[in-house]
Length: 165
Figure 1 (tube, one colour):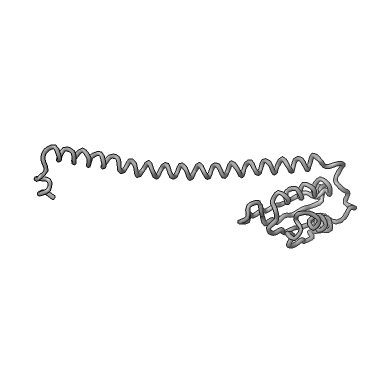
Figure 2: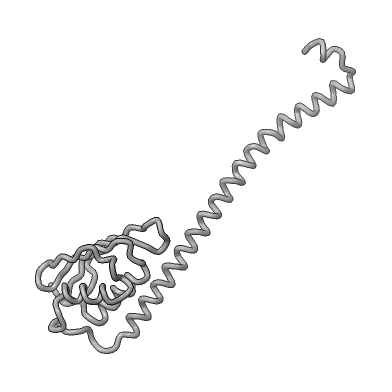
């Protein structure tokens, strides 16, 4: 290497030194900048997806409010059937058909329900209907997202409104 350097003229040495200094400054900067740019793009995509989720949730909330606001009259009286029969009948009549895996009574006015691969929007609308038409309110709800968009597994407890009050 020393022999190569000794054969170069002063002008060529100066050009190589300037090139090496430029490469030494630009290369690390370029590598860091490229990494930061890629990370910023990933974060933008993530934030965009989160905004889409929020918009979807707000639309679902509006639909639920619409169902609540569209209910006529008071909730059905306790004589309209036990929570077990109401759950069974309403879940099997609508779009939740085939998603109810288990219904377990918890006394006279409460029930636990397990749903698998249910459409989330339909689940929320169904829960709104149960509350406004039949006086059943959700006391606990656990929802697990499924690989298919908009589908969930859910475990919930419902009881007749006014129980324990």
